[in-house]
Length: 327
Image 1 (cartoon, helix red, strand yellow):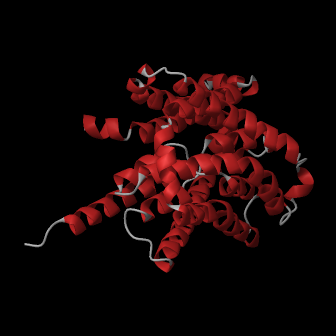
Image 2 (cartoon, one colour; image 1 turned 135 degrees about the vertical axis):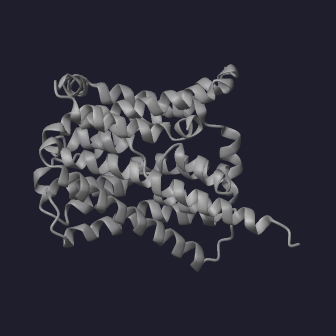
């Protein structure tokens, strides 16, 4: 039991954040989270998340991931083309405005900074390639999001309700992603080698910071969620279908181009997972009045981790079976 808790503590932490914030009868947990959110709490936390992510990155692994060009192109195609196209299908449903916005935010996000890399390696893939994809995707998103998100919004009436400043969004992404990421890499490059031994601690700190972001978001959405639990079920179903559709597209792509095991894992996990911190900062900045959009981002992150964790086990066991010699 202790080993399982240690392995899945982040997922347990997400569940506890939801439960404690929503179920607290006094409301002071939600009030504190809302106060932090209104006083630049998300800005500071997200800056720290990407700063520590920069410290955790290994430049040597990034360089070694440059070799699989076709795999990188396929993963980027899934991240920046397939995901927005799948999200665009939401306009044909009768979804509430907040749900559509949340799905659009998830779709235009780059890939996650940590879990996808870990899962790619655990499933038998190349973590160096996965690391290269996530760095490249998080740099490119500075230029893709200001284009793709308005295009998606134009498919609905939402675009008339949002003042979308492309330059401001580019600057914000640069300040909250690229600047702290480069700062973290610089700290590592300046010879602070002792930080390498502290990598597990930094990883835990990063995950705790993400839990803080989620807490502030749940605090904002508490009035809506506490009155209508059916909304949570609807959101969970929507994000599950979206993630499964994106995974299905990834599997179709690797089959179509006959990508072998060892290379396909990075495409699958990096092409389908989405970063949470950046989606939250854009939701807070652009769509603060739509609390349901935040729930879409958070629940997608949680459910995608659960689905991909199961997939890692299946792919990993299958790979071990292939490697066993015939007797």
